[in-house]
Image 1: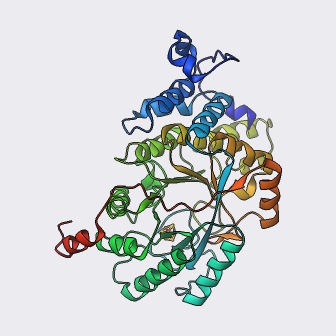
Image 2: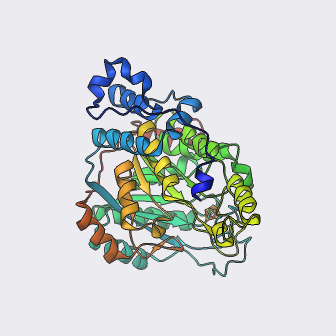
Image 3: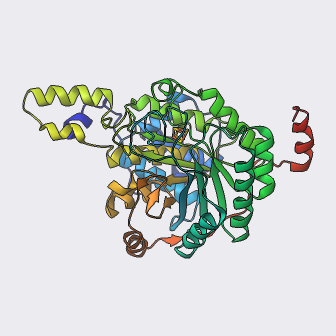
Length: 411
Ligand code: SF4
């Protein structure tokens, strides 16, 4: 894998100044010899969030020497957040399996034989009990996931979800839902119920997206995000790496998110957890890396087991630090795939700018990190659990007025 990484394009040399500071950088011509990560991080700190990023700008940040990128991600992180605070979230699958969509990575799609049994929506007692348990364990955000294409025609279930949202918000937790595509009116109802955030990941770049999902379009995803934003709910949207995409697609994903009219308040960065039975069960290398691996294997330079190398920690760090620099205020969530990273590797992710993890036995249907190991990690790394935040700074919206307006389809 070291050999594969070394095939990356040559990067501009970094002249590192040990007495470096952003204030000196802004008035010094030495910035011209710094990496793109340094230059853009300095600009982010000076100007705050912006949404006029060009794809090339983000690519050059992403391609900066990884330790430099990490360092400058950390600088922006410390400027925009309390760097010791890490939010613990719990994600519960309240309606598992039987989904009509064809997301290639997902064991919950009814199109794949993954051995997962479709279940009905969990009842109120079970959901609230899980939320209580999560709160006792330190979670301040409770996310409910339902394996639905959308919420259209699911009035009874949707009303139940609204009730769960109200109750869990009443427990003093942030509440997030991921229920597939939603309509304007449903976003308004979720807002009124007290929903903090709605998750709808873009997954990957617009160009690579059709390789992963064919049953809903990229634009439909963006439309849901728009409805969420207009309803005054915080937007949670990120992606997955390790789907076979190129690095250019990772940049494309971040570019789409960073050029939305308002940045998502929450950006989950996932590493594929390949599940047997899904089309991506063996998808652990990028196409280029696979070709290189095959070449090296044929020449007996690497073992066959090298084909099975999953997403590397350095790839996660590139994503996290770039996300931090281009969307400084977002909560960058180290999400699926964390289970494969040891404490030192996770520490690098926090340093690069991640400030949230998912705790609990499972992340929807895939395994998650051990509770005790997470508690130990907080202690060893000197992290402090982040309190819930109800300071919703998303576009102000008058829910009542919009409700009237959406009834006539004109909001
Ligand atoms: S990711 Fe969501 S929408 Fe896609 S198949 Fe899985 S449950 Fe369905």
